[in-house]
Length: 311
Image 1 (cartoon, rainbow, N blue to C red):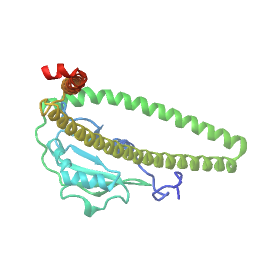
Image 2 (tube, rainbow, N blue to C red):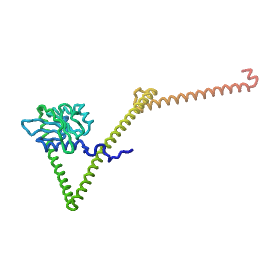
Image 3 (tube, one colour):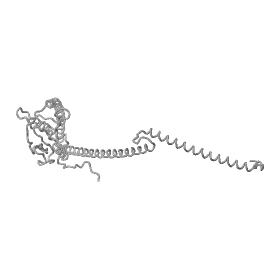
Image 4 (cartoon, rainbow, N blue to C red):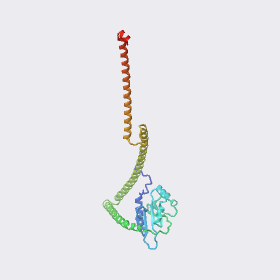
């Protein structure tokens, strides 16, 4: 039976987080609840440098403990990261590493030794396991330049985005206030509930559509790989056939020049035709010789007797 795209794969009571949304939500929490400077998806230096999902530095002259945060929205991604040891690269720029995920995805026991864990539930972020902090290495000049140059630009972009979101929320609040004023609290609450349900339904639809897109892209990739393998096999067979044909016509065994093999075939055809013509001429000569012999015998038989005796 075909699966309904509107039917979610997870508990409808839990929000299904996208990776980037989770990272920005964590950054907003850290900006509001800590005394740290926060960067999101910032490459810590020149091209090829490590790039944590969220990076923070405390506003302190005496307690310099930068932290790197790695956001995970799937267990498979978390396990792959831990297996490869990718998160340990952050320790070249941080005093500790913290994994961040939706509530219920990871347990405290799943986290590698030394790393921390924060989870996002319906009531906000919670620290499940604190990281083991170590002394941060001396950070290079390229690192500080990167934070200054890109960090300031991103701050302006973030403020503009927050202002736009605040205006949108304000407009929605004003619309809800007008509904309450015109139709009363009960109707306004019903409209708001319907709106929330519609929003949640659309979010679940988007999440399931993204899942279907990912599955379709996987199927397309497998189909392209299969066709590529078939083309490679056919190319191999064609190459072997060309090599055999090249040997048959007297060309180089690794000959890939079709025109050269065609010239060789033309020569063979010409020789074969010439041989056939010679055979036909010889047959004609033999027939003529046999006819001349028969004519001489008949002429001799019809000659007068004295001529035959004289002969």
